[in-house]
Amino acid sequence: MGSNEDGAAPSSTTTPLSTQPPANFDWQITLASKVIAITGANRGIGLGIAEVCLANNAKMVYSLDLMDPSEDFAALHKKYPNFKYIQMDVTNEASVQKAIDSIVEAEGRIDGLVANAGMTKHQPALDFTRAEVEKRFNLNVFGAFFCAQTFAKKCIALGTRASIVFTASMTSYRPNRAAPSAPSAPYGGTKAAVRNMTHTLAMEWAAHGIRVNSISPGFVKTAMTYYVERAPDWDLKMQYYGGMPRLAMPQELGGAYVYLLSDTAGYTTGIDIPIAGIVGAW
Ligand SMILES: NC(=O)c1ccc[n+]([C@@H]2O[C@H](COP(=O)([O-])OP(=O)(O)OC[C@H]3O[C@@H](n4cnc5c(N)ncnc54)[C@H](O)[C@@H]3O)[C@@H](O)[C@H]2O)c1
Image (cartoon, rainbow, N blue to C red; front, side, top):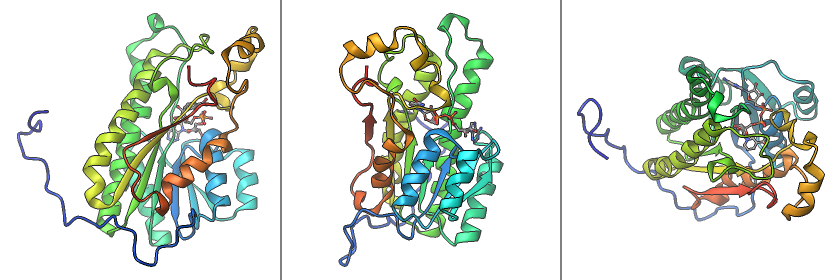
């Protein structure tokens, strides 16, 4: 609450963009004709989301990533030549702006953003330095926010109805007891911030026809969770925790992203979808 830092009133909105489905709306869940940008899709969850978007007829999917494309990226690009990569640093606003601009220049449109790039650090809270905490917040929170803001400004300028999906985490709700070897209080804090801002952005940007939602994965098999199954007591814990005694494949999250990115989710905004197979939920 309160006034802006500079004392100015919040900027006024333009004419609201209708969120009503048109009379001839096709109710099939599809991304046909959609141009989607996914941050951090050169590997892991982002790559899995890209695959499911492409399997559901996305016109173009762009991975906006810092690192060079992986072999897995190349394999998916071979199957879907409409899967492309632009080098981009989520923590650098100029780089984000350039990437979004170049997509619109090439495609004439942009319809969806998955703000997915993020990182953790597995170590006890007592060992974190300020620099280590700042690095996580800079990528997971500030990066996600400025990607969303840059994308939203572009969509407003183009008059496009659009969808933003953040990758939050089950750690945004509570620490996971099935992987106590992975404490990361700052990481959980970043993901709680992401899930929280989803709700406010959804309220603010509905008038512009932009929906904002998040997805909270539990355990997903990626480079980030290499250690989970290696814990000596993993199999034993899986016997007792209930739910699905395994990590998710990245692609198993994809359907939820496709739904939220699609026009069929036209009235869905400001929600989080937890996808955790129960075992990743607590
Ligand atoms: N793996 C899990 O179990 C899990 C669970 C819940 C949430 N998440 C979240 O899912 C997202 C993806 O995680 P993942 O497991 O696929 O991780 P990952 O490390 O396999 O992939 C992350 C990708 O982000 C890219 N990236 C990192 N910094 C970047 C930057 N500054 N600019 C652009 N790209 C950058 C990396 O190059 C990489 O391709 C993260 O936000 C993570 O917090 C993961």
